[in-house]
Image (cartoon, rainbow, N blue to C red; front, side):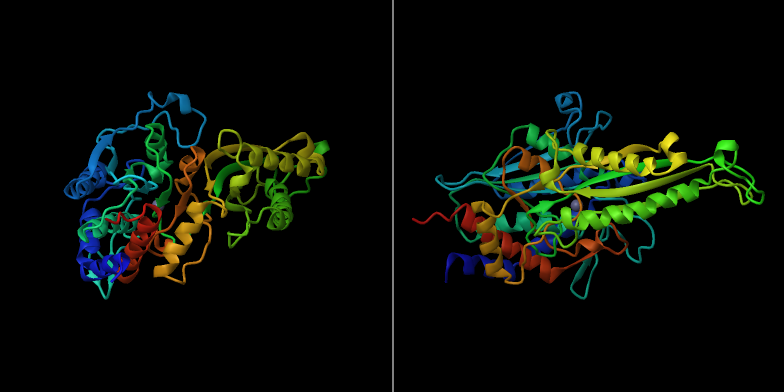
Length: 436
Ligand SMILES: [Zn+2]
């Protein structure tokens, strides 16, 4: 029996290891405090303690560090920095298992925080109930399942009496769901490795990139006036329907999206970057032309479009210019330029496929699960900062990402176990097994 077969067998025989750890993690609710939720469910610190104990028992050297806005002030204007976020009893956890030497190191990373429960649960969101091979609970998919799988993979290798040449570290962060200051602090603290896996749910796909996300609010001004009366030209005092003017943008955004669908695609992404209007608010009263229309949109950008701060300022400028050009085609808008307020800029990252880390991960993962294809993540993950400091990083984890943030979030135990094997396989190939 090869070393890998031994490890796979151990994982199969000891499924309770990964399932048990996941249950424990779900049962300590770690809702991010920036969500609308009861305080008693906001126990990121306690969840980190559960995991720390597990790492300690495995013989890892562990420590807690606390993100601190003052200490991180030099990151102002960079991804993940929020001057007003506080971290009492919200530690990052870092544990390291030293290798025997001569191998490449690996960091396994994930976020311990989860989003609020939300409504319409038919089970206890923190009960970790199992039924028909599914484990239910907030965070089962996003992403305590991934954390359990990556941690149990390290344990399996150890329990089989194997030693890795390279160091393996586990870094779990707080605050991902509210902007990513945990990962910023982890990286700023100086933790490094030759490769990093983030076990966000990818349904076992190998994700070498995530996209940047912009939220913007476009305000289009009109001029109110009685809707049932003849208004005449706006230059002589007539009303201007803000809904009508905003509709011009809806039309032109379709044109922009057509363009972006060829200029902003990526060979590893299933869809191109687009600008989608998500909210449309306008009008005050049924007898009045709308005074103002506000369109809140979501636009995505590629890692190759990042600016020198690692953010989307180039794409913001592109959208601002587009909005201006459209305004110039309309006599009213020309003199009443719409404005954009930027709400969110979530950063992105990418590891290119000519990197040895990329190739090792693909081969080792497919050895366990030949169906694992390479496909980027269309939304944000915390991989940006790892990439920014030169750590090749990939996302690979268990669970259907569409179930994240939903009521009755669940993970298939079979997938959880398979992912544990995949990560063990990757670790054994990247960090190399010590042979006597
Ligand atoms: Zn997540």
